[in-house]
Length: 112
Length: 114
Image (tube, rainbow over all chains, first blue to last red; front, side, top):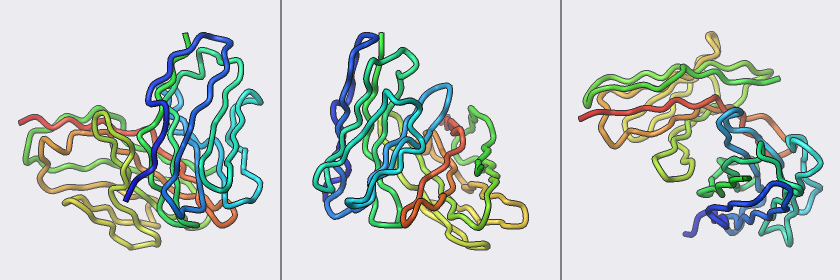
C-alpha cells in the first residue's frame, strides 16, 4: 500500500516568510509524528498527534512552530517568520498506536 | 533524559568485510531499541528492532542484540555489500502516552567500496 507522503519535497524561502509543510500518513495509522533532521542537531522530535487528542508539542523549538492534524489524517507543520537556523529536512512518520513508525521522504527546507 | 550514542563516522570498508557499528544508550526503564537506515536520496527505513533484553533483531543480514547489562545495541553484518552504503541511525523509544517518541543517535555514514 501507499506509504507516508510529504509535500513539497523541497522548499526554498526567504528569511521572515511563513512556510507550510504537509504530511499524508498511512491510512489507518492513528499516531503521527514530526521530526527534524539538521546538520547541527541530528534527528530531533518536534511534535506528536494521537487520534483526536491534543498534540504533544514538547519538542517544538520555538513558538514560531505549530502543527495541526485535520480529521485525524493529514497534518500540516507551519513555521512562521522563518530563520536560517530552520533550514533542515522535516520528516513525518506515522504508526498504529504504540507500533513501529514509518517515515516519509521528508521536506528539505532552505531558508535564505 | 534519555539519549543514544553511536560511533562516529564516516566508516569506509571493502566489500565482504565485517561490519560493527557501536550504539549505547541511557534510559530510564527498558525502552525498545531500533536501527534505521537512510539510503542516498531516500527516507528513513526501519532496519531492525528489539523490544526487550536479550532479544536479537535481524534483517537483510544485519543483526543487533539488546544488551541490558552493557546498555548497548551494536549493529553487525558478516559480509557487507556496496548496496549497504547508507547512513545508519540507532534509536530508542520513549513512551508518550500510548505512543512512542524516538530518540536518535547522531547517525553513522557507511561507505562500502567494491
